[in-house]
Image (cartoon, rainbow, N blue to C red):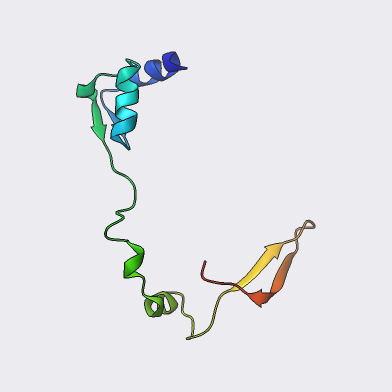
Amino acid sequence: MWMVIKFMHGAADLTLLPSAAISRDLQAAEVITANRIRLWNKGVDSESFHPRFCNCEMRMRLRMMRPGEQPDVGRIMDNGEAEQSGTKGGYI
């Protein structure tokens, strides 16, 4: 498997990786050298988007819902028809 990965990355001038751990793995397997690796933190900024900043009022405004209203939850049945649930679900 490493041979395939090495072949694919060998043609690249630069490899963007999401974590330092993956960078270490590729270097240990001699897939690519450190000077051709850059970290690319493509994930969500967990500090800026931390749950402590949750604002239920803003969430309802963005979903154009009235206070106390919750989204309807439905499902697709085996025959392909939609069935509306009799219960109201929580936030999606």
